[in-house]
Image (cartoon, rainbow, N blue to C red):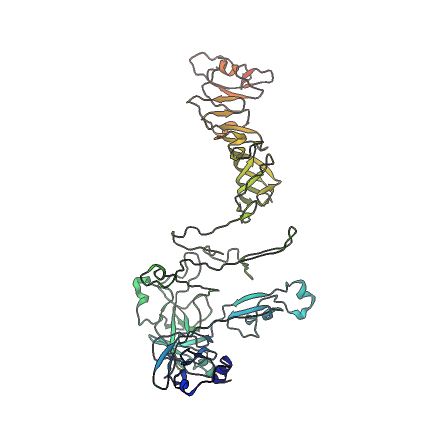
Length: 594
């Protein structure tokens, strides 16, 4: 199919021109070549534009064939020697009068598809970045990727999925591995001449790396991973026996070693000493220098590079009013769901596996699944907006519900604010976190709620609440409507232990209450048999203790109590307890005395 016939198809019904108009035809075929390195070809789709004043411009908008030369003599330009181009290639047009115009076409691509089966039949757009052909594994989409000829097995283990967009990648992009005879500042001499097929696979601007290490760079990085400080270059030209590069250096070395690797004229540092080459990469089994042709230094799945220049909005020569940018908006709209649990939705999913891995920690500690790397000008790295009892984050340990609350209609109801879990080898799980409780009947505003921090053993987290498990003691704020208080709460969740009240007073089990300025709150170890064990005043005398209400088992420090046979002014003070006959006794069993 010729370019003229393609132009006819694109402009059918508008190609009849007058003789006068033909004199004003601007045609790329009349120009002295197109863009740098571009050769006109029958693999072009042409457009013919008819201006209102009768002038006509005919120029290529798409290049469907590989028609760029490998060694342009001019400036460095876009490579893409294996690329089909839709727009983006400017053309200088000329009419028969010698007048010229510069056309810069742009093209868009729309795809309408109806995927229907497995593998590549399951995607509307399949994109592969691999060294495999379409008939090989790396050239087939992993969509319901089970051989249908296996019958029931493929159905029972499959999902019959389809996708709009599929990306398939592997690390097989190196086109060939070539043995090297010698290095020079301009490239390398090969051990064996290249075949025609090998030379056809080379391109100007192609990556090239070697297995020659920089001897003055570390072999292991700070995370324990073997480094890739090897000599690399970019191909500038070649013959059957020699491949030229624009210059050698160590990939990614930057200013290391005083800027040594920023200098031109470097030569990979390896020599044949005896029967062995020096400075070869020990990650591989190669015993001689080799070159990996087309080898990337890093693999990306997707890499978007976006520039928003605000001078184009607020500058003296502004050309745009848009000052915001949205990245990958995903609008999901379910409709007509009329019963619970009728549908399922999974958003962005990272499915990570390590097949045939024989160690416990195969990846470095800097590995991650998701990273937000931004300056401090970025107000938030992550925003979760859910309501009611939905979860903002759910993990094996970390559990963060949304901004819900305990049900005000149910006394004793609770809401998990945050929870962290630790799974023990015994099979038990320790839960530590914060919860809010509705604990005052008839009080539905904040005064009817308390917040607790504490431990629970086992149990199940269901959205924003616990089911089952064994609660331990909690530290509670505003328990039972005592505004401003901090209390220790017993495991039953209803009984307060010691409380520090908002007015500074202290309540201790056993009816002790103190307001004196000298009041001291003793450590939790002093409440070993709580709630009956402890004191809030180390200066109480026996008469004062006896005057207050106590019950059996209460244990209090008596400031003026004496030991048996002890005289006054010879050191007083003893622990005393109330027995079943309401008699205060010291630990030796004798009745307390002062």
